[in-house]
Amino acid sequence: MVEAILVLIFAGTAVMFYSYYNARVALPPPHSGCYEKRERLLSDTEAQVLQALEAEYGNERRVLPKVNAQDVVAVKPTPDQPLMEAAEERIRHEQFDFVLCGKDAFDVSCAVRCRSGERKGQVHDPDRFLAEVCEHLELPLARIRTDQPITQARVKARVDEAFREVQERAEARKAKQAAKATKAAKAAQGTTGTATAGGAAKKAPAATGAAAQGTDGGSPAAAAPASGGTGGDAKAGKAADETTAPAGAAPEKAASAPATPSSTPSSSTASSAGPAGSSGTGA
Image 1: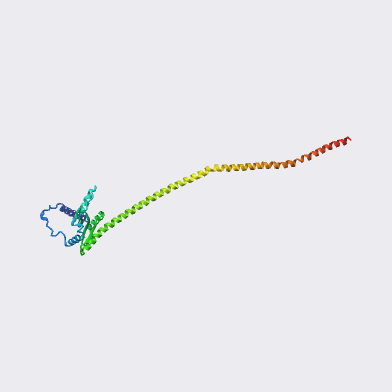
Image 2: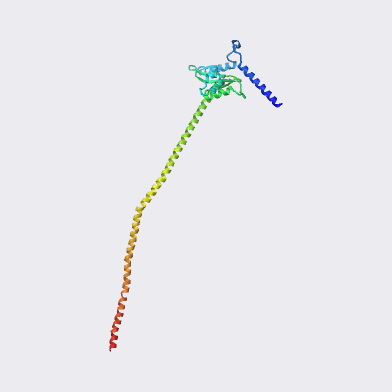
C-alpha cells in the first residue's frame, strides 16, 4: 500500500514538472498587441535622486538613468563555454538605476543602485551580486535608500563613500603587496646570510686543518734543533763522564801502585833471607 502511494506521488510530480516545462517551451509567439507604453520612465523617488545627482555632478559628468548592467560590465572570454553562457545569463537581467560617466569619453566612473530597504533571505539578491561584481572590477557602487528622505547632501555622501571604499581597498591591496614583497626580500636575505655563514663554517675547518698541518710540518724543523741540542747535551755529558772517569781511575791506580813496591820488598826480603839462611846453613 505504501509503495503504491509513493508511486502515485512520483508520477504526479513528474506530470506537474512536464506540464510546466511544456508550457514554458511552447509559448505563443508575441505580437504587438501584447505591449503598452509606460506613463513615466522614472518614479518620483528616482526623479529626486536624478535631480540630486545632476545638481551635484552635472557640471563634471553625465548622469544616465536605467542602464543595463550588461552595458557596463562585460563577460570575460573563456574557453569554458557553459560558464560564459551562465555568466551572461546571470547579468543580462540586472541594471543600474543611474550611472555617472564622462561627458566626452562616456567612461563609467560610478554606478548607483536605489533600494527601498534591506533585502534578506533572497536567493539571488541583485544588490549583493552587483556589489560583488563592482568590488571585483574596482567600480564605485553607491547605494541610496529610497525609503528615507532624498536630499542632495545624502546622495553626495553615498557617492563619496563609494569612491572612498574603492580607494581604501586599493591602498590596502598595495600595502599587502608591499608587505609580501618585503617579507620575500627578508626571506631571500636570510637564505643568503645562511649560505654565507655555511660557507664560512666550511672554510673554518679547512683553515684550522691547514694551520695544524703547518704546525706539524714545522715540528721536525723545530724538533731537529731540539734533538740536536739534546744530542749535544748527551755528547757533552758523555765527554764529561769520560773526562771524569780517567780522573777517578788515576787515584785507583795510584792507590794500587804502592802495593806493588810493598810486595816487592817482601819478596826482596824473602830473597835476601834466603841467602842468609843458606849462608847459615853453610856455616
